[in-house]
Length: 239
Picture 1 (spheres, rainbow, N blue to C red):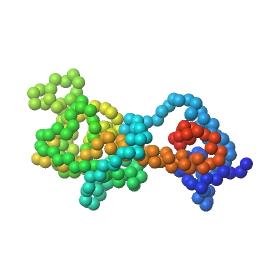
Picture 2 (cartoon, rainbow, N blue to C red):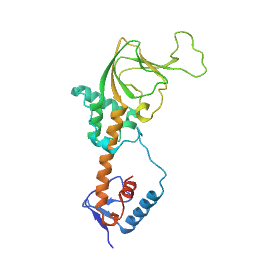
Picture 3 (spheres, one colour):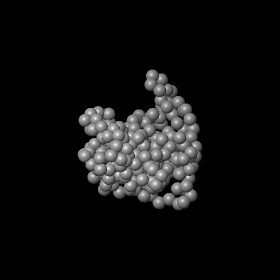
């Protein structure tokens, strides 16, 4: 049997799909057989789950019915947020893999938070539920160490940093369900921040992942030799 051609590309699966000069995807028979074997092995062994950022599972019905939040912003504000995302390594971990449409959805989900001097934006030990990016103003970061007896007036712990415009904090709340590791307090007369909550971020990631999954599954279903795979086996192959 000769090469098997699929008229769509699936760039993630380079070990399985390779484009010819005309842009079609060509699969050799031995490659397809290897892929079939791997998919069936994955399906037979129910171990080894893979979890991404904001790893809590999301029901498909919730993904389909979720209404994306949209907080209007002027062009200058949107551009500034994009610049912060592109310039910050921490934010690249969170957002760098998103396509333009999904990145736009994330920016739309960011909203403004105003705070006054002395206000605690996050407190060490509390459950984290959002990420902050500083637009204007400054904040102090305090860490309280276990076993250290702090004097009166220093209950927040020792000051370890001062952050200004374009800095971010709280990003671990989007990645993991972990308690806050520091207290962050406003130290300027006023502070304007951009806030992204974990729930919309999780849902937007789930929507993008589901869309890509359905697209890649559709491509693979066009290949004759993969039509013997069931839905679960195809899903493992897409991973």
